[in-house]
Image (cartoon, rainbow, N blue to C red; front, side, top):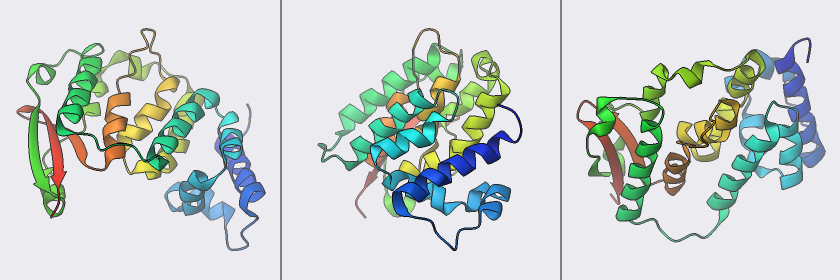
Length: 218
């Protein structure tokens, strides 16, 4: 695709939103294009789209079909009345996710046993202030660097909107994982995305290794 690919993607995306909900006379396309972080129409209305419209949004992107399948899956799970994930189940998801990361990167932090820490919602931000996302380990993974320009732009284009689905960058990474080479189909972010959907379990990494925060009621 030639020309300004992000502008093309953005016009297509908003045309699909128009088809579903009607045009918005207050929407300023150029402002949204210049500052993607302020494009709340794309960030939020995307997740109210019918399945077919959502598919049309993604189809213009590299690996769009594959990413849309993942986005639709997570949206369905968020909307479903699913049983509460127990602490043991969450810890097992966490351990399995860490095992997936270990297939890609060798890091001594991954060898340490994961810890579980119960915190109140009001304490969560302070408690997690000195922790990183597990994904920081991928900064040294060779696979994450082997990606062509259009795929890289697609990941950047989608990032903020995908984050809004469950307010989690682990969800972003799971949905955009098809953009990256994964010949063994390990899919390391899936378990972390599932934890994000619970809105109760928050994986992290600090100097003492992996840690899973469990939010209790205030």
